[in-house]
Amino acid sequence: MTQYTIRYDGGSYIGKCTNYDQAMNVADGYAKTSGLSVLVAREEDGEIREIVVHPDGDITHLWAGER
Image (cartoon, rainbow, N blue to C red):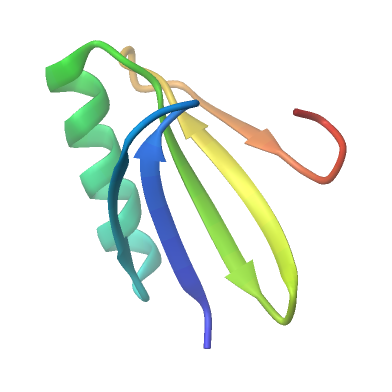
């Protein structure tokens, strides 16, 4: 099962869910209201992919080794 962990980039845990759209909407809302970037980490089959949602709405994909 795919899990999405949401937290401030380099910071506090926000939450976890199994729905991509929900995870991205939560991240976008937190980024816009806080002015901080929010990290969404997708965990599936032992592999982790990360997406950073920035306050201006831009997103950055971080794959293995790019952090």
